[in-house]
Amino acid sequence: MVRLALAALVLASCVDAPDETTTAPAPLVGVDGSHDSADRNCNVVLRNLERPWTGLTYETRGSSWVWAGAIEISEAAADEGLVPSLIYQSGSDPQWREVTATAAQVLATPGFARFDVRISDGLPGPGMSGTALANTRIQAVPLLRMPQGGRLFDHNRNAGDTDNYVITSPDFSIWRNDSVCMPPAGPQRARLVFDANWTHHREGVLAPGGQVSISYAQTRLDGCRYTQGPYQLWDITAHVRFEPGNQLLAGSVRDGVWTLSVPSDAQRAVVWFESTSASGCHQWDSNYGDNYVFDAATPPQWVGNLSTLTTRDTSGDICGGTVAPQPFSFDTWTRQRAAITNLCFQVYQPGMTDHDDPDLWQKLDVTLRWRLSGQIDWQTRAVNFDRRVGNDARYAFNWRELDPFRMYHCPEVRPQPTSDGQYAQVALEYYVVVNGYELRPVPGGWYTGYFVDYKDGFWKDPSCGY
Image 1 (cartoon, rainbow, N blue to C red):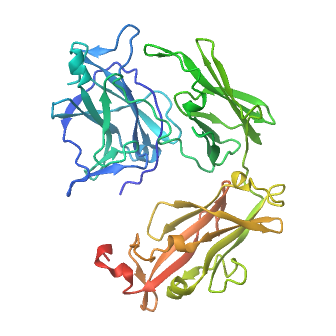
Image 2: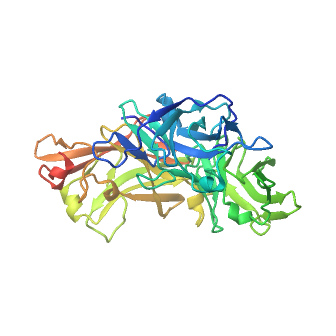
Image 3: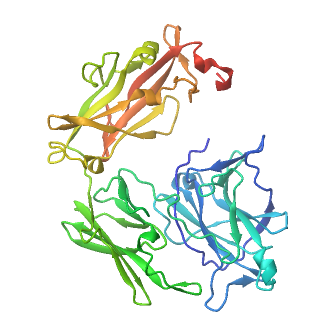
């Protein structure tokens, strides 16, 4: 199975080479026996598809208009050597055509690889009547051809398995939507999101020396919107001042996500927004003059006291029990009788965890990385703050959420017999990450726990295939 991850934004192509078009079967997603599947994890995503404007008219090739756009694929897909294609179909013509995208010469969204695509064969053009153009409907779908012979279709904007991108009059365009497949957040990459409902939040870690992306909803500052024909004569600019070095940067967020590097000495980022237009309009979004402030996250001084408690007793503490690196056991008794099944650990950072702080959740990015034995990819779960213990912040996670033998759930891997052959078990591997700091038993290692069930438990139902 190809291991894939995530993707994001992009602009129209400027490549002049003609498209090399081949015919292709229509998408077969949802049909029994199909090798096709729908991607909703940002492995392949169409950023835009528009008619290039030459300054006088729209670009043509023969009697057809040209459409140019960009497709982005996840870095993991690019590492596999995969190249995206676009299949499309126009009007009453039942034929689907396929064009292979070409590697772009401009930077991609962080976390992705960008490809440009141009199509024109079999498409409408300026010679068609107004009525014909008004009735024109073009369907388009980006895809990745998998080594196993199947096709992975972009359904990151279009939720339904048979939903495609549709191009119609009057604009004949698929516009950018950077709220879909934004740059991935992580230990060295943060995302500052300013939503249309006037809320804002940070995802990932604003790490000195890392990267930060700013996603801004146009509707927060659309009073200066001004266009002439195909030209956008207005803009929304994000201003960022990193302190204490006072590095001041600015970039457009009108049409997409702006990504920038975080200075190595940054302790916080101060952000505000400005909208201007050729008509003289001027507006601000600055949190009523206070600006938006995001503290940079640095690895904590200490993370430890990792333990798992499974007990029926609710009169005492919710933490304790088996101390890592000793493996924990989540057995049939625990599943049926235990009231508490918590993984707990503590974090210490001077000036941060040693006092009550309702905004601590914004300063410490605390996650559990886990996988079942036999799996390759690590998965991530956020871990919630429990309470302060002395000068430490304590965090707790309920193992029931990951129990592979929970009711009405099929284990993702085949259970193995216990050493005595009386039960079945699945091993879980895990470690903890706090602001990029990894709590592991040894560098590159992981902790282990065992989920145990009866050999003929619910998971033996034929529907699980075991």
